[in-house]
Structures are given as structure tokens and as C-alpha cells.
Length: 495
View 1 (cartoon, one colour):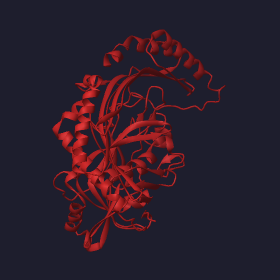
View 2 (cartoon, helix red, strand yellow; view 1 turned 180 degrees about the vertical axis):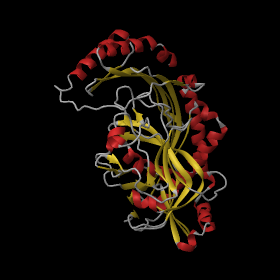
View 3 (cartoon, rainbow, N blue to C red; view 1 turned 30 degrees about the vertical axis):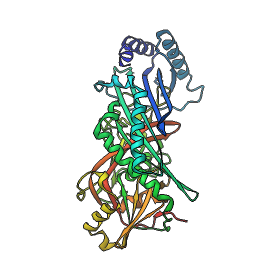
View 4 (tube, rainbow, N blue to C red; view 1 turned 30 degrees about the horizontal axis):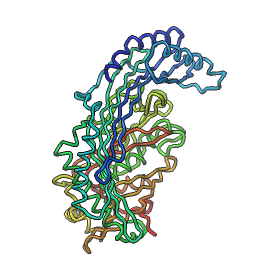
């Protein structure tokens, strides 16, 4: 698979030569991707699949600032050069076609390679063996938490790119991704609830890795118990309350509320911009809170280079409460008043790159200790953390929002609507489980009300992010838990 991209050196040179001869610049993106997936339910493989794509995309840029993109599903030289000629002709007709002109910042030529060892194993995953292993894990979960229905899936994906530019840039990188996901459901009295859990790794042998399997089972058992108990739980009253959120929900807040609003191609309507330019220096949160986006090696969303061939940089979106960096590419940075951070990603060679996140997190200065692993903390242990920190001296009770199950934000207003997996009311009265409810409000109100953090950073909250019809892996997190004092602009739903 990597060899297929390594063979493209001569064709890449020919493509660049043809673009140069026409007085245009070229970004040429070649991609190969292989994915294997199996889903098990009731001890049997319900679905099993293997798929792959291979092809290239050309992006032609004229001196007048007009661009054309085209793609093809193979690497044959003659059709590739023909495709490039047609793209050059189309870009040259920019004024006639009423294209908008766009000028990129000057780029530094980059040559690099990032190919993890052992990735060939992702191309030979034994799906029958994986299905048998998933069935074993499923039986263990169902035996421990009877009365729940469980489905469990495994996906192994290898995504590899080679990107050439007219300035001599030539980067090759591969991104291995494997995930095991569990969905536990339970129904009672006409009420049905489902709770998910997942574990990721860059290695397909994760199903036989004792530590990974133990982590998966721990998370899956928690999900199954919660799914079993939720149908009997009451609905929480609506209003503004003191809140503690876990790292997964914190990742959702960072990603949906601040991450998307910081993407430089959205500044014409983003609440983090004014007159199309990023509001760098403006205060948007508490002075001890920061939001950072950067690639993390071996992470689910790891991407060392952008889809334009730039090294992916660390972006300090919020630094101690103030806006600093946007997520940008060479076309959006100057117009948006931010530096180029190499944030462009593309779902495939068929898509136009866009500024996107990788691993995004909320960091708080001087977090309070939370010994042990995150999985050791149930609602009782969270209550103890809050009690030891003196939280109950200023609040009679606190709502603990556990988990993240999706949401959305209006980037023009900064208003968000999220869903958690469960609510626990914590206080001197004890612990009361409530059904999940809408967590909504102003992203500024939420970030300004972060009071304490507990535990080290945990950044393995994973998912997929959709934007303008493209889906790419996302991840991130925060400290184990964040404590938010009540704010009138931040609410829990109810009946």
C-alpha cells in the first residue's frame, strides 16, 4: 500500500512539470485507504466488510488566483496528465466562469515522511478471528450485566497520503486507526435507552492486548449498567445549576463550540470573528482556562501533515481566557488575520481541503489531584472529589453530566446544544441518577464558569466530525472532570 504511493515519484514530477509549463501551480494529492469492519450481535457476525480506495486529486492555481480541482480513481500516468490539462484549462477560464480569486500565503517547501512501523498488519486483519474475539467479549459483558442487549464492532483502517506541490514539497504519511465500539441498550415500561463506549488504538492486535481489552470491558460494563438503570430514572428539572462534566463532554464543548468557530474559513459568520477577522486578544473565558488543538501521535485523529502538505502545527486557540490562534490553511489565514497553522484536512482525494481540528482539549491551570485511572471514578468517587475540594461548601448540590452523545453549535451566535449520557445529582442527600437531558447555552458563559479541574489530561474521547459533507476522525478531551459554577446562560433541560 505504501509502495503504491512510493512509486509515484516520476508521475509527480511529470505532473509538476506540466503545470509549470502552463504557468500554473499544482498541489497533487494521492491517497490509498483500506478499511476492514466487523459487527457482532448475539455471538454472531452480523456484518463484515473490507473496502479500499485509491486515487488522486489535482488542485491547479493560476497567477490570477483562480483554482480548479479534479480527481481520478487510479494512478495511470496518461489519464492523470489528461485530467491535469483539463483542470488547467478550467482554472484559466476563471474570469469567464466568474470564479472568485483567492491568493495563498507564501509556503515553505516541505519534504517529509511519517509512516509508523508495523502498519502492514492492518491490511491482513482476520475478520473471522476478530468476530470470534468480539463474541467472547460480548459474552463477558452480557454475563456481567444481564438484561441488556449488546452489539460490538471492530474497525481497522489505514489511510495513507502522498502530497506534491510545485515548490518542491513532497510528503508521505500514513495514519493507522483501529476502534472497538460497544452499544448497550435496555428497555422497560416502553422506555428504551442506549449507551455507547469505545476504545481506540493504532494497532489491529488491540483485540488481543490485555490492557486494551480490560479498558474496553471496564467502559462497556459501565455503559451496560447505565443502559439498564436509565429506564427507571426520573427526568431532571430544568434550570441553571452547578455542573461537573467529564473529559468526553469537555471535548465536545471544545470541539463544537470553540473549535469550529475558530476555523478560518468560517470567519464571515463566526462569533469569534469581527468583520471577517479573528478576534485575537479578546477575552472569551476564565483566565486559568486554555483550549489547544494539535495532532497527538498514535491518536485516533493523528495527522502529521495537512492536506496541502504543510506540517500540522499546535494551535493555541484560547490562551488563559484570550483568543490567540485560529485553525487555518494558506487561503484563509491572511484574510482572517491569523497565522497559517496547517489545519487543512480532507476526507479523501476527491474532496477539497478545509480547516479542521485534530485532537482538541481544554486545559486548566493547577488541576486538583484525582489519583488512579478515570475508569475508577463513578458518581460516588466524583462526589468525594468535589467534597474534598470544598465545592459543597458553596453549592448544596451539583449536577454531574456523564459522557457525551453528540450536539451542535451555532457558530454565528456561540449557542450550543449538547447531549450527555446521564445526569447524577450529587450532594449531602446522596446520589440520584436522572435521565440524560439537553445541556445548552452560551459557549462564553460555559468557559467563563470553569472553576476547578480534577485529574490529569485525558485525550482519548473519539468520534467523527462532519463539515460541508466531509467526515474526518476527531478526538480530544480535558482533565478527568471540570467543575462549572452556575451561569444564567447555561442550562439543563427537563420536561
